[in-house]
Image (cartoon, rainbow, N blue to C red; front, top):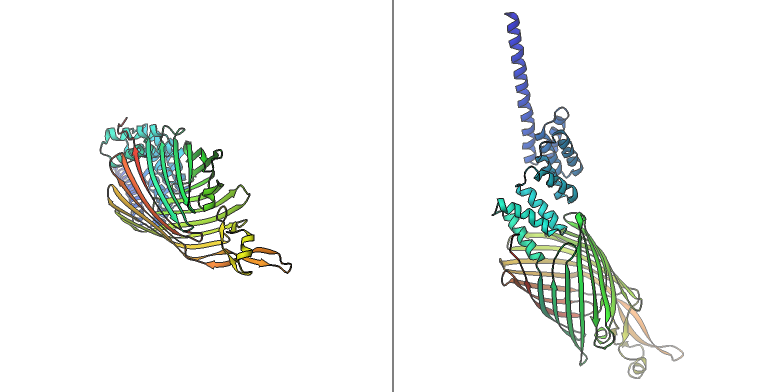
Length: 506
C-alpha cells in the first residue's frame, strides 16, 4: 500500500512537472512574440536565445529568425533558418519563411531553390508562386513567370497581386510602336524640330530588339539644316544575377551630304539589391546643341558609370561620373549626385524633395571669337571685349552647382497622370571665358582669353502629362524650360504609343 502511494505520487509529480514545463515553454515563446509585436526586438532576441540553449522548438526558431530579420541581423537570421531546416526537415513552411527573407534581400538563386522545394509539397500556395513569378520576371524569364501566375489564378482567380503582375508583364513585354514630334528654341538663337518613330518587341530574355528613327530640322542664322539618325538594338537579361546588357548600333546622316557616320552604344546594369544597382556604358552619338554642330557633324563618345537608388519608387538617387570625348581629343569630365526623399506619399499625390550636386570641367575651352582677327583689328579698340561663341561644342570651366530639387506626381484618375520636376541652383559658379583684343609692344595683335568666376542661378523645370487613351493606346505631352550658363531653352514634345497587348492567360 505504501509502495502504491509512492508510485502514484511520483507519477503525478512527473505529469505535473511536464505539464508545467509545457506551459513554461508556451509562455516563453508567446511572451517573446508579444515583445516582438511591441517592437522590443532586443528583448525578444534575448528571450529566444536563452530559451534555445536548452530547447529545440520549431515555433521558437521561426519566431527568432523573423525577429532577427526585423533587427536587420540577416546573417544570424539565416543561421537560425539553416538550423531549423536541419532539425525539422519535414516542416516545409520553414522553406517558405526562409525563401521569403532571401527574396527580400535579393538573394534570388537560393530563394528560388527554397521556394521551388516548398511548392513540391504545396503547389497551390499563392505567396510562393508570386515570389517566384517576380524572380523570373526580373531575370527576363517571362514564360516561367507567367506559368507561376497562371497557377495562382487557377486556384485564386481574383488574387489582386497576381492580376497586377500579369498586367504589368503584358504591358512591359508587348510589342509596341511609338511616334512623336518635338520642338526646341533657345537664345543662341537656334530652333529645332524633330520627328521620331520607335518600335520594340520582347521575345525572350535573350532577344528584345528595338529600332528607332529620328529626323531633325534645325534653323539658325537664316539657314535650314537637316539630319537623320537610325538605330537598332537588343537587350539581354542574364540569369539570376540581375545583369542586363544593352547594345545599339546605327547611322547618322548630316546635312553636309558626306558619308553616314557610325553610332553605337553598349551598357550594363547589375542589380545589387532590391533598391541599389550599378550601371556603366559608353555611346558614340551626334552632338547637336550648338549652331556650329548643326552646320557640320560633331560626334562625341559619352562614357559613364553610376550607382543608382530606387527604394520602392520612394527614395530615389544617383551618383555618377561621365566622360565626354571628342574627335579633337578634348575631354569633358562631369561628376554629379542627386537624392530625392518622399515628403507626401498619397495614392493620388506624391511629393519628393532633395538635393543635387554637379561639377564639370573641360581639358580645353572652345570659346572662340565670332570674327576673324583681321576684322577685329579694324573694328575693335585694343583692350575691349570681343564677342565669341562655343565652336563646335560647349565646354564648362570648373562649373560647380548645388541645387534644391522637387518632384511632384498627381494621379488625376486611373488613366491620367501629371508629373513635374524642378531644380534650382542655390549656389552655382563657373569660370566663364572672356575674350580681349590685345596688342603687344611689337604691335602684334592677339586675342587673349581670360576667365571670370561668375555666379549664376541655373533653373531646370520639366512637366509631363500622361494619358491612357485606351487599353493599348497612350500619349505623353512634355514641356521643359532650362536656364543654364550656356543658354536658355524652351522645348516640348508629344508622343503616341500603341502596345499590341495580348490578354490571353496562356
